[in-house]
Image (cartoon, rainbow, N blue to C red; front, side, top):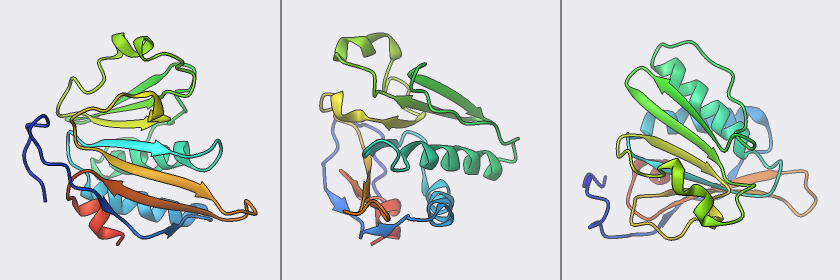
Length: 168
């Protein structure tokens, strides 16, 4: 696993998982349980996909699982669509959940301090507006099947990590 905490000098390697079926809520919950055990402080999770495909449900399950693992009370995890950012302090773990859907210009993000705290886990829905950063990123691609009956997830990363390896 890549251990270098200097995010500006890392070599970028793209790794990719297999296609994961997340059609039912139970499957998505099981995936977030696995990921919550493999996540590290400083990881950045970028969530891509259409409206309603499961990005916020993933974030909710993931944050609640981190709370469970850290023996803290489970809280209501709402979509930060209107607030842009919801922050969760889980013992000594800081999780920031962003939703950039309503952001039209990159300068609107200037006061958010994205990626300034190296020990924070960032979950970012709708990250398409972000310029390329020299940071480690785990990308989650949520999608519907052609008939919208099934949903799937593909995970990729710009560095070698246990999360992508878990789902190959």
